[in-house]
Each structure stands twice: as structure tokens, then as C-alpha cells.
Length: 295
Image 1 (spheres, rainbow, N blue to C red):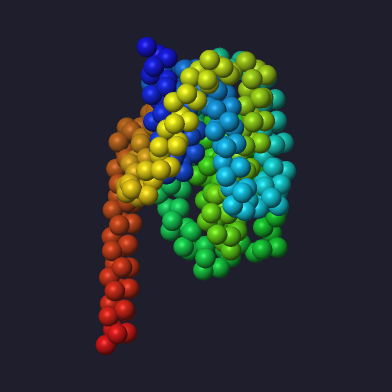
Image 2: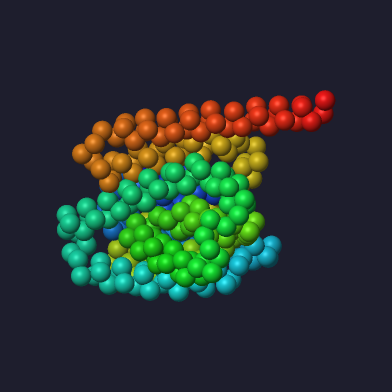
């Protein structure tokens, strides 16, 4: 029965990735840990190789469309690949099955999920704001891009989360002149070598379940295909809101289990309500301006 449920889990994650573009790591790793009781390190390691295989298809699609900025990919890799190797060496020094190692992975996974939930919720707003001009001096952008790669390398290798939503959000701020399609394509192109190096690193310390990996892929590949075709017919905004709420709940449960998980959900709901109120006010002002200009 586990075989069947793993296929279903792969399909659901693939479907959501196809619908929203949210990285599979932010969904698959918590599902494996919470619903299937897969050990934290094995869930992370297996998901990293899973991500490298599924995202590799994206490189060909984005490459054909010219949606990849290879200079930015190289800058990110200058930071992320060394960070990934350092993190794997650090994990090798730990007893990966010990309570300390599990708690470290759970804490950073929770933090990554909380950050991901915010980036999912506010990505469109950041995309619009970034077009108003550079938030960071362009002279410092290459160095900061390398630093961003280092941070992503650490987070992705330790938690399997960050290469998708967090990477896109940060690139929007650092490279405001790039169109969103090029940002996404660049992020996918960087995620493949990062998740591959991190996944192989986990394989070297025995934290990859290859049978589980194959089972997840059976479900996820058709899920991604169906989700990508349904994306134009589904209200993506509300799917993103639901995902953000789920990630906040799970993230707080992993990083701060001492607090009631509903606290984070309530705070996020308040943020969503405030965001919706501001959006309505903005649309009303825009409508009034349009009407006045026509009189």
C-alpha cells in the first residue's frame, strides 16, 4: 500500500508544481517526513535527486525559449556548489541519525518553509515593485548574486528547500530589469546542478532511498504535465494562498514546535487580509483615475 501512496504523493506534488511553479522540495520533503515517517536526512537526500531529475526537463524547455541567463547561473553556482560541498562535509561529521542532526534539519527546513510561504504570497507584488528601479546598486549585484548562491547552497543541501520560490524572489530583487520568464528559467537552470551535487553528496553518506525516488517519479511526471495544462484554467492566486497557509503551518511545526501552530496561520491570514484590502484600494484608485481622465 505504501507504494501506491507514494505514487499519489508524487502525483499531488507534481500537480501543484505544474499549477503554481512552487519548488517540489517545499512540498515533498515535509510530506515524506510527516505523513510517511521517512527519516529527515533520507527525505532531504531523496528529494534532492528527485528535484534534479524533474527540473532537468525544464532546462531544455527554457533553453529553447531563450529564458536562461547563463552569466547569472554561473554567479549563483560560484557560491552554491562550494556551499553544498561544505554542508555535505559537515553532515558527514554528524551522526545523521542522531537527535541533534534531525533537530538541525527540522529547524532549518521549518525556516525555509516559512520564508517560502512569504515569497509565494508576495512574488507578484515584488515583481511589480522591482520594475520601478534597482533596490541594490548594480555595481554590487554580481557579488551579492554569489552570496545568494552560497545561502541557497546551504539551505538546499540541508533541507532540499529554497532553489525554487526563494531563488526566484531574490533574483527579482537583484535583477529587476529581467522579465519574469527569464528569472524563472535562470532559477531552474541553476537548481539542476545544485540539486544534483547536493543529491549525490547525500548519496555518498547513504541518505538516498532509490526505490522511493523511482516511485515518486512515477506519480510526479504525469502530475506536472497535467498541472501545467490546467494552470490557465485554475485560479492560481487562491492555490498559492492555500499553499502558503499549509507551508506556514508545517514550517512552524518543524522550526518552533513549542508554539501553537495556529499562531503562524492566524498571522498569515491577517497579512493576506491586509494585502487584499490594499489591493482593492489600489484598484479603486486606479478606476477613479481612469474615469476622471475620460470625463
